[in-house]
Length: 219
Image (cartoon, rainbow, N blue to C red):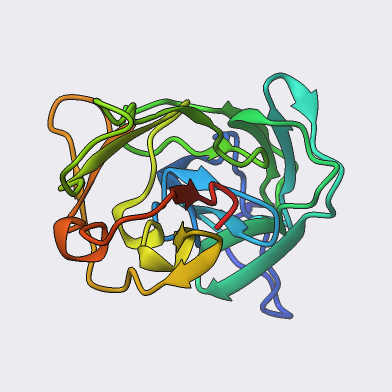
């Protein structure tokens, strides 16, 4: 008796031999904050990545300053092999640089693990502590016989340009409020957004009296 090679099944079934580990590409992490390199309470940090083949829902772990985050992680599959893992920063999440680990498995059971790869551009830092004022002024001489044109304020860390507005400023003369909405706010170059000049004050400090100028760092 003779036999012939059999290379198909009668019911159309098949088995695929896959010995290759799945891989990821296009890994990036960002924050919903105005400055996407930083995140505070209420901001959403999102890690995006793409697999080279179909995988099961990956396991993603986030750390901040080496400690596990407290907030829950949401993992979604927006389309095809594109995945996103995100969490909303909570008050209890540790401050510091955010790192991650991604564990993946393909349909054949091959696995792979990816950890944070810093590009210098795709880094996010959790910062739940508001800025504080290091120095304000001084105004010299004091007392004086002329108006004050500007005051310099220094913070302990860089301040976002869009967040520092005249709403954080107040001025009183003899304990009565003075309209300071016309003041200008300009960052001092080369200070990493730590030092700012509050200008256009001459017109609102020309009258005689005792002035108190306040900057609210919490705004």
